[in-house]
Length: 84
Image 1 (tube, rainbow, N blue to C red):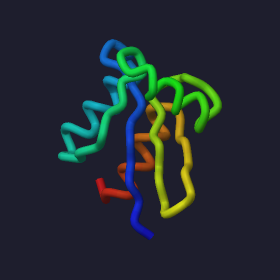
Image 2: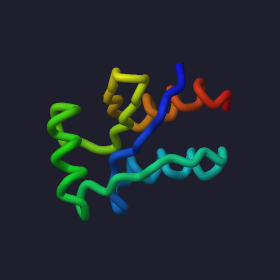
Image 3: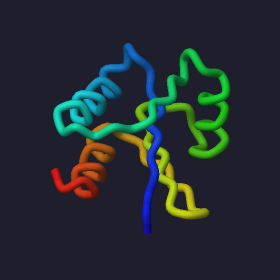
Image 4: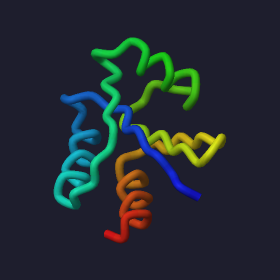
């Protein structure tokens, strides 16, 4: 099944930076949602994921939505999905 991704993050978060660097180095393009600048993104993260911690990867598989927290878990997951 095809998956789509959104990364909930903010610029000055060091763990978010770790994930963004991984994405950049490996040429992976995702939609970023800034939870400090975008009130709607923060609300969506709280409502869907249950907390406002970042980074958080929103994974959409058809009607199913999964929320993955922790930078190293996100990197591991995307690395597997993108064959990195």
